[in-house]
Length: 344
Image (cartoon, one colour):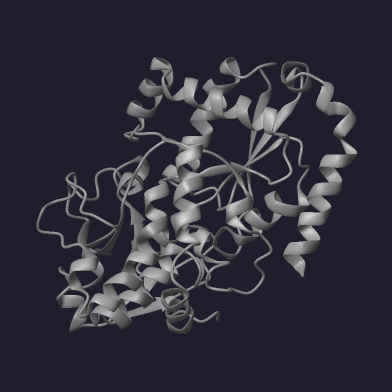
C-alpha cells in the first residue's frame, strides 16, 4: 500500500508540474540546483568521493550549468535516503541519489521501512565497477584467512541488516560455515572503519575494493594493516591477490551458490545513482548525457586519479537491466534469501 501511495504521489507531482514540461531542460536548470543525497554519513569513502568529484565537473556538461550541492542522509543502510528520493523528494530533476548498492536488496528481502521499488528509479550511472571484500584489522585478531574465520569468531561491524555489511557476513555464516558475529547500527561504512581502528570490532565484510584502496585507507592493504579474507562478487577481480578466494567457490551445494550469487549481484552496479520515478524523461536523458560526458572528461579522470579512485563507468541503462534481472530471480531463490536473512 505504501508503494502504491508513493507511486500516486509521484504521478501527481509529475502532473502538477506538467505546464513546466514545455520548458526546455536548459532553461529549467539555469540558475537551479541539483541536490545529491548520499545515503550514508560524511565518512563515506568512495561512496562520498565520487559524487563530490562529479559536483565539480558535471555542471559544465549539463544544459543550464546548474549548481550541485552535496547532502548526506544516513539511516538504515541507505533505505532512508532511497525512500526520500523515491516518494518524498521533488520529482523534477533536482534530487539525485547516491546510495551504496546493498540497498537494492532491501525490498526483495522485505526489510522493515522500505517504501521504494528499485525497478522504478531512473538510473543515471555508476563511475566504476568494483567488487566487495571481507577483511579484518590485523592487530585485532589472529584470523588471516576465510578458513580461519570458519574456526574462530570474528566480530564485524555493519550499518544495517539490509546493507552489504549486514547481508554478506550473515550469508557467509549460513552458506560457508564462517563464524562472524555481526554488530549493526553504525551510521556509515566509514564509521565501521573507525570502529576497527579503535578496536570496537575486528573487521568488516562489505568493503568495496576501490574504497579500501583510496582515501585514508589507501595504504592499509600495502602495509598489511588489514588482511583480506574473501571476495564477494559474481567473478574474481584480477586486481585482488589471486590467493583471496571467491565466496561463491566456498559454497557447499549448487543451491547455496545460486542463493549467494543473488546476494552478490548488486555488486555489478558499482556505485549506482538515480533520479526518482516521476522525473520527466527529458531531464533524465540530459543528466545521463552530462554524466557520460563527465566520465570522458580528462580533468575529471585526473581528479579521480589523485584520489586513487577507479574510473570504469557503467551506463544508467545497463544498471536498469541489472536491477531488472535481480528482481526477476526465481521465487524459490528469493524466498530462501528471505528465510535466511529475516528483518531484525
